[in-house]
Length: 504
Ligand SMILES: Cc1cc2nc3c(=O)[nH]c(=O)nc-3n(C[C@H](O)[C@H](O)[C@H](O)COP(=O)(O)OP(=O)(O)OC[C@H]3O[C@@H](n4cnc5c(N)ncnc54)[C@H](O)[C@@H]3O)c2cc1C
Image 1: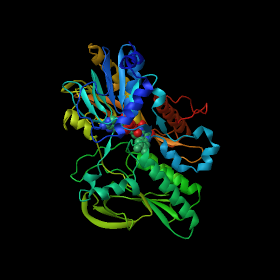
Image 2: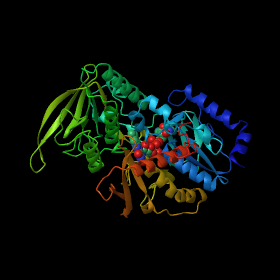
Image 3: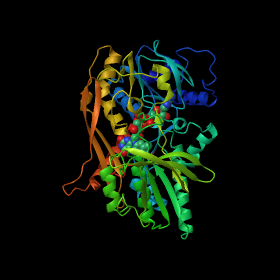
Image 4: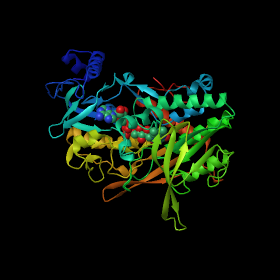
């Protein structure tokens, strides 16, 4: 019996089932108003083995597609996704570099990087607007805002969540909410909500700077801190994202010849731009965004502020208070001064954390088995993508896709009861960052992987050409091709060369 047959037994069509599911969630309190629970509330389980994937992001859609392609005739694949559409962060920064009219001209680039799930519904079931709130992993049942659902094998791929509360512990909820609407970081999968706010604010800033050429404007952007207030490591999705965003904003400012609009790039590091430092530094200096990052001048578009950490924000007065460390010649911190900087707009990168649902399912200290993505104490349960913290992998979309490819064997082993071992040292990751103007250029970092005491670890390399130049049009083409492969996960086919359309 295939998935469609199962729907017939249940007496509903695929479309109707999805619609019912959506309607139920909008009615909802935390548990969607469900009063009695049964493992079949959300979706009846037939005799087929069932894989449930939590999270329809890059990792989740990759593993769902892989298993459906390889074993769809024997296995039922269901994705549970809290949003109704997916906004892909990778590549989306390009939209900040262009004017709307440029996009109209460049049909190949017309993209919102927003994907609907409906194109994939004919292949496997994706239940949208469905948030997993917990579960009974011993009995293999998930609790969702639309009811309970049973499974045989579970993959949790819930990405990251913001953790502004840990960064600004004295702020109340209403102040924390202002980060999202007034200084959005647009770093997580929220169907593009924060991204749209950020982009609108940016376009408005450009309009103001154009209208008032005599008035000085500035936008502050910070790199996600590597350490938290207690000195522990923070989870950081796509560490070069802040550098990329700063670069594309600078390219737009240069293109529009806006001498009265400047960017302050704040980082806690000393003289370093962080991930892909050498490549960003060279690109900024050679493109004229900042001719010497250690000695910025008033004519530069970007001014880096090193050794700096945001401490507070006055959203009404538009002032950021930050601490700046003083270092001695041995690079030891010997003091710290509090400073303030006014902004017209700010993009504040906040700490990130694993979404709470992972802890609710497996406990806060969940670990994966040695050399595996299966949970150590929970057989048939896997964690994929940015939500996993056992292996030392760069949290990137490319990484999530690659691990999903290798993990397919392990997951099939779980579904068929015949253990299969996956070799994760064969993983690949290339994380791109746009740096160019016209034609577009990009830089990248690629990783190789080793296994040490059961932990898969990545080591990065930032490629440059024989002349020592990092940015390259070929890398931008490779990035575009990769972004099209994200589109394919959501049923959007085509290539850059064919002028394929990326958005749904
Ligand atoms: C600006 C920016 C640029 C980037 N550029 C690159 C790049 O060039 N290359 C690259 O490789 N990566 C890049 N990344 C990183 C990449 O986007 C992420 O690493 C990738 O999306 C991780 O995939 P994931 O599946 O783990 O999480 P996500 O893609 O975030 O997917 C998680 C999904 O889970 C859903 N979810 C969460 N909780 C629940 C729940 N309780 N119930 C149901 N659903 C839930 C979410 O709605 C989401 O759809 C970039 C990121 C940013 C922000």
